[in-house]
Length: 231
Image (cartoon, rainbow, N blue to C red; front, side, top):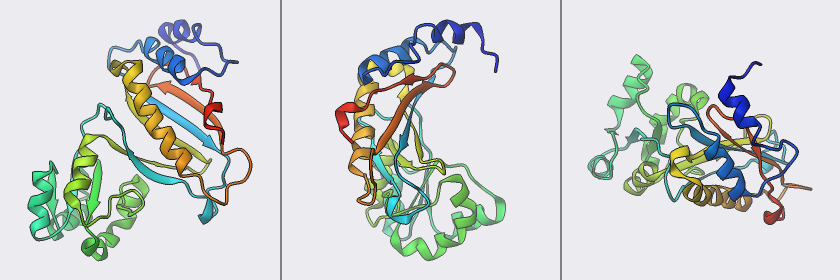
């Protein structure tokens, strides 16, 4: 794959054979983000688990202290007083049957996060084939199925992100924008890594964190040492 001049120049600043500590890696990521737009900084963590086994799944959610830098559109599927509570907390859309029907009948998808109250799950279950493949299906593990809809909406708006393994046992998550600077990104990095370490399944054997890489939207990757986590 042929890379542009900016990428090539940025890649010269990074030693591919070195594992950087997180602070240095984030400084490099920020300094090599040369695009004309505000690049997203992403964390990619390969884990020593097998996602094919239910007892080795790693999934959860964490509120990043400094948010993601992205405005999130929240749909709250709920009834009664919860509708107004969700809207007061900042939900972009809140309601029940009408939104389920719009998603099913019209393919309406103008939202980034779906939060549901437990009493809606019978209806929400019908949306599994639509929301599931897009990673939008509400889940108790991610805190998106909850009786406290207002709290869940507030957290989503504040920068709550969900992390989960893909089929190759890697977690991919945004931790902010290059414009945040290394210090704010570092706080977000520590929050996410702490959550992943805490989520280590009891069935996981051997080295838990196999590798950790930081990338920006258009820039080269930087390998990060995770020795301090001791897992």
